[in-house]
Length: 297
Image (cartoon, rainbow, N blue to C red; front, side):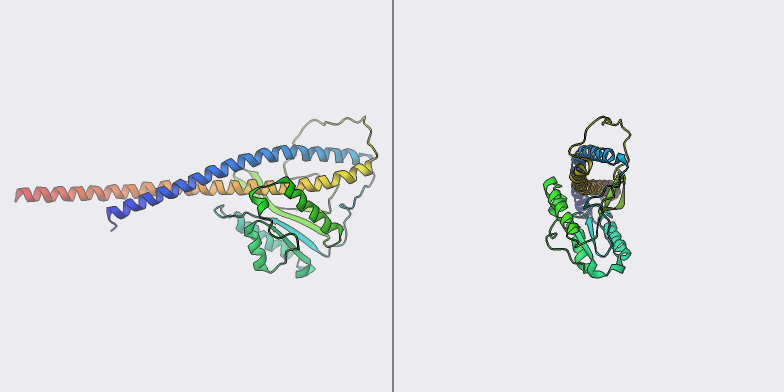
């Protein structure tokens, strides 16, 4: 049987752990709220880009750009997002499982024709264990996870576009967690390149809103030139939204994991304190009996 001192030390230990999990939950909540504000404004901009794209394509012509022309798939790049740290439930293990599934889907291409671009320390380690090579210039991208900076994302997007234009890859696919709700994250995979001009983006459930643009406007210099300027921005924002979506999912997963840990600590504290009080009462009763017994003698 544990002594009162040992139980008291355990109570202090659990209380310290609870303070840590509670603090981590609050930090994750603050980061989640900040990222949600950012993604809200980016979504608005992104949907307006798609509205403009829709206007350009309304004349029915089959427009194509250098980033939308599909070609025979011989080599693929998988851009996959994870976290840099742990304590976020099954967030990282699920993304690793999904990477394995995606790699299996493209085994016919051959090991050397599957390029994995990991964004996050956890998935970078798994990529190295699996033996897949990271393309030059795409190493050490974990800094983007901790601070989703738009300039860093634009630079990454330009590198991916150069890979595609240089025919080093025929397809670029994004693999990440999509925050379906505050209590649910689902794994998603989306094609970044080539860009399907007729695909309506589904990162977020479409919002019903009034159309901003009227039909009586002039496009200068012409629809094709405007399309060539617009498509790179759509690609950039799609990559940025995937990063933000993954970040929101990570913070949500960590917040829920820390809430569960805090709740478990509370339950454990109740049990330990109850046991402590019982032992303390037994000790007091035993002392009283000894004193009373000694007096009677």
